Image: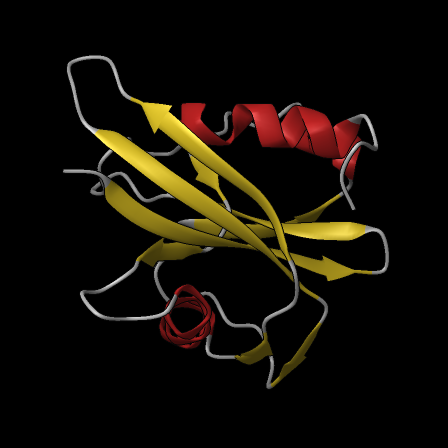
Length: 131
């Protein structure tokens, strides 16, 4: 069974929001983009909107889907990740569930310990292939 996940590339000027997992989450202290699982019967964009409201307290305008990645984790389990661009939202971003959130440049992202599933995308962002 493939897990379906959405993640947001929230942009402010030339910065992107990166979020660090807490010690108590699976894959602790790894960096990721905000988002989460698509619920049964839910559309990806609706899932994205709901997750950003839950995790960051914002009402986001979900932009284009910029990438779709299927990642196989060692030991089984695959995940399909859809990344959406978010340039506009209402409300102030607040950290509700993460250990830390940080606005970073594309280059700074390379220095963060991102989830394995996100690495290809991080490299594409850093090299200017995306967005």
